[in-house]
Length: 391
Image (cartoon, rainbow, N blue to C red; front, side, top):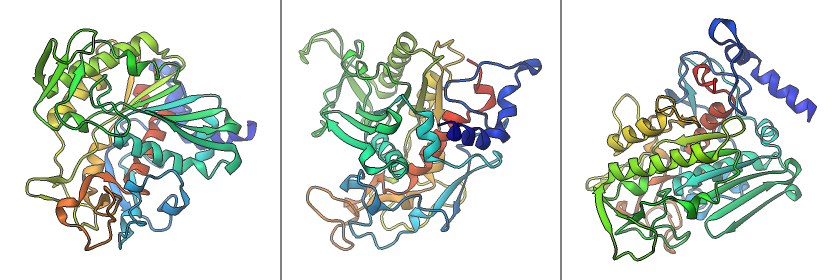
């Protein structure tokens, strides 16, 4: 353990000075888990995708037992693998420490890390398990899913990394862990006790919620405490309902999380590349270059998340929320979606067996883009920006 901590400090050495210097050279309190700071002015979500066949992918699809069949593109006949060979390079951030599985596990020793959200967040969760599991002997790790909760245990580290299914964060009629209700969505406007009881006690919370808010322009909200859906249902624009729920989450965090011991992160919208008459990811093999993005991300929803959570300091929050911005970087990657190369209702995704209309331009092949999201998460957790350091 001592050797590992020394290794962490060695990795962090170029970034410790920025964290140690506050106003007038003083030393501010640092956020929990931070061992250093990224350079001043560094935004890890701004940069370029760089071809890197030497270091990518970070693991092999067949070597990770946690990837669901919906995300195993090679196993389902995808003929190309170039989508696996791109590395995200932040601009103006110098050489931030590379993702190190042993370091992350050591930092999570005796801790509980919990992802909360939808299938895109679950994809990032699975990606993290793939990045970590080879650093743990087979007999010292376990994985189980119980209804909406999945738990990965790193026994030698007394650590758990978990995922909790709550696509709208608030309680809703879409909460079934397997058979999700896709239409006529109703959320409860009251406190989110049904879900949040699973969140209590987590040392690192990683939220996302976006995709399920974009299926229509209106959301129905059930007011009151009972389950009678015929009573007191009001309708409001999706953006305003999203704002309402994110405020509920922020209020819950302020009441239930100790900011001196725990960290909270929110992952921004994962973009889709399908809309109009077709699915724009179908058959794509290379990232988008330049500033033109074939993405259908709602800028209105992004603005709401930024105002409520990105402005957590300006609203005088007890618990600051670190925003992991994966939207812009992912908008370039129309090539990395699962397309037709996945298990879908008993079909196989072998080329020629399905049509363009079957292409999934929302979810991502693994290994792939979610691995880069976890690198951003790693930097945000252990090397946050210098101006985010003080509590």
